[in-house]
Figure (tube, rainbow, N blue to C red):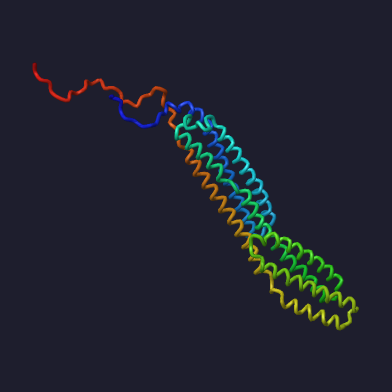
Length: 312
């Protein structure tokens, strides 16, 4: 009847289970800390890719994207392996409430939550980084087309029509490659401006080719076919944009926006992972020994009487 009121916690009942789980949870925590380093490195690769895109450095951009693709896959694989280790901690299962204290279960739950924070990083990196690389390659192709088509026109001014036709064949190949890359982007971004640019340049290339061929066929004489081809070439030329600078800016923004989203997603995953690891630092109380009592130590002093005794 003198037993002091206590709590429902009975640490001695889960002591052995908590002690068995503790080394495994500590090992998992170390694995998750290393995983955080990998996620941080992935974010650095994303920022490096952004810098390469702005600097129009396709070599560095391709290298950063390739490294990020490999690392993002390794991160998701490692997360799965850590999750398997957590599920195999001694005491896991339907009876874990009897084997573990609430603190141990909370740490296990935090560890499981941590392994889910990296889900989707690989697909995020692939989808958005691919858009950046595609936009960068398109920029290179557009600039190259301007040079090739302009070179063909210059050859025509010098009456080198056969050589001009060869250059226009190169321009056709560039337009075809650009359209293939355009198709890869159209499911995620608006490519209407790009499509219009490609169509108008293809129409001009076709008109210029017909003019060159008409002059060759007429042996340099001004025939009705040559005059009609010259008029068509001039009309197609007038529909061309003055230059590709505006489109290059649009493509750069497409790529930059995609990589920005990837970097943001990576940083969010890293923050969630670190928060989960922080919750793992809650240490369970495994210091209690079986048979320990919540009762206060008995005092050596005699108990005070509640009343005074009467003299006999």
